[in-house]
Length: 427
View (cartoon, rainbow, N blue to C red):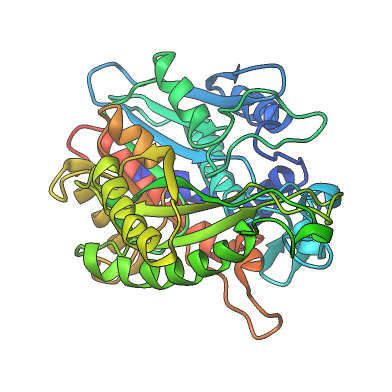
């Protein structure tokens, strides 16, 4: 406990606030994380870690470092992604994020009492800042460890394909855990891992996600000929499809819930027709959706369930709906009695003074699925979403606002977990 006390004494709210500012002020949309990765690698190096910025290409990079133990114990990875859900660029985010970019939607950190706000200040950057400050504290204290501690900051952790805009990588696989996969492929394996992502609890399993593209057929024709030629507008048919699909998605969670998961699904995109040529109907309309999948359910099982619903709907609407699965990341599970889960829960209880209970109805997917799929037992722990009477907290505000006091709590949970795993007899 003397070692723990020494480490925790180095983790001050002032240092946490500074780190939250530092990581938030460097834009890191998916595919362009390299500048932030270099900052993180440089700070790890300055703290005495063997660290590097690991490039996937010129613009996308992870940061990773190792604090070596004696070699006589087990290694742990403390992991957080570093890319933001949106870009902070008006020409890309608007109008889909809202009518304008609020201040919290920009990569410009600012203090609001106990909070720091700015693009991704909580998710993922506040969680990454916690790992950074803990890593720097371990570097200053230099505890005698048996196993290694690896601090890893992954690019491309958001559920997104490539940003299609000038200045972004041409590679399609820039998100969906691309950085985490690359990290592991290059040998950064450990015995255990903890991923820092939102949620004031310890999770041992997570949903995966599957993306589907539904094609609604129609007839390409001209407004002036609607009354003279065969007419079937796929945009109009798609309206019926979307309405019924939304009802199907509303019933999906109850059919697949587990003790901790309540997998959700949403329709995220509709495309059909030329915006420059409103005088014509398109020959097809495309609907894309995200459906979460619980551990143990295969992507093909979900595809067949969706295809069965669409076959019945095709008959009702007298059309031929097509469906293709365009992304599949299965959900994963670490046994709840695994050492990393038990250790993380013990650390959470010792830090919070509360008894840990499994939290139900989760539907968020993270790079924990990549870590577990590669054979690393992984627990997830994080901070609660911010609530405040001073401002409204919608989805974006929750992503973009971090409570420095909660950062201090998370750092203690991570410190207790890391020291227990890497130090023999510490448990």
